[in-house]
Length: 428
Ligand SMILES: Cc1ncc(COP(=O)(O)O)c(C=O)c1O
Image 1 (tube, rainbow, N blue to C red):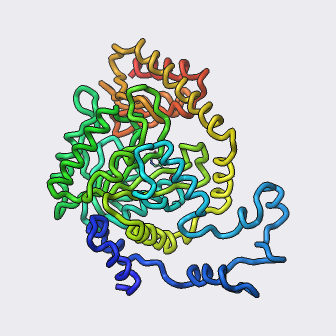
Image 2: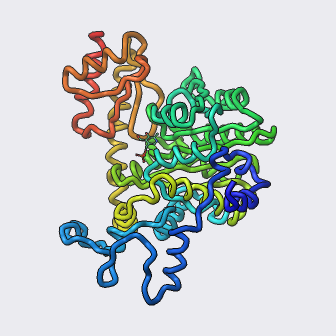
Image 3: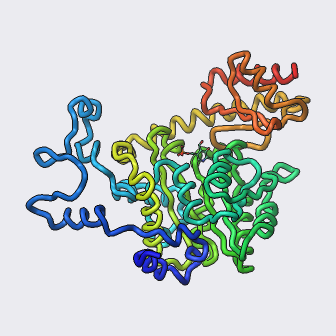
């Protein structure tokens, strides 16, 4: 193993994160190569800085005029230069303070600095690389975003252990989490992904459920289980009911137990309506970790980024940073969040009207972009095809569920969309 990796591992050797690292995670280190030497030169090379592989003219990075006129408010340094591997420090600082504002239980010194990733998919994929070895198991409720399967099963050659997302009375199946963790833990170690608001169901826990889930995980930690709990907060903030827990579970878990490493994956993607920007973040929290120990996790994740995509899009980071600093930004965001809530309320009323529908049984939902029907009879794929014939796109899952992304259909068309779905289902 490289000496730099050994040095990093020594700093965290007494912690749960170290025990949870995969072999690859243990081997990761950030080389003292071009990036490190260039950083040194930025401080000291006052005559000529001939370190980094960018082209400079008259003291600034070269930016062609055709591009410059499309990005008039960005300087070349903000538009075309490489961003640091772990992200623009100003954006990381702003993202962290915004996260604390929205999750007021968090303590700045008790969590890591976020590491910037190329979207949330990338963040989760990096976590899988750092913490999951071939043959290990990742615990996820049965209603999950399909891309996890590719990451876990094909990329990591690990497996998924799942359990019903809901209890029979349509509540969050907290016992399912604990039983499945116990069954699938290897050497008392387990990796869990929680995704609220959930894709595909659109469900987020109530405040009581969030606390019960935290308590259940802490009880496992008390028994000696070492847990990596990954929060996939892709749809964070889109909560439509008063009794929903309106923070990330990270708010509960970052400092909950020495045996729990909480990793918050979030992104500007859906939360800030910039899907193609590819800006996401991973932030760590584990009781008792020092800033120096968090730095090791940040460095290892930075190393995994350096080895794969080197660094993430600079203009996307600069635009997001400037937009988030705009005084009207929060209000602009709120108005679109309110629009999504309007659609949600409309759908709730329509569903109420159809509560005795013989085919479509809506799963409990209260947040996010989606809602999903369970097919009491008939095939979800057949229904999807029927709807497609009418020019309506939906997603069928396992032939049993039909997911509707109401985020993608204008408010004035919601009633028509749902009436057509119920009509098509009646013809199955
Ligand atoms: C639950 C969930 N997580 C992550 C993502 C991916 O986010 P990103 O586009 O930032 O990679 C999605 C996108 O559909 C998602 O539904």
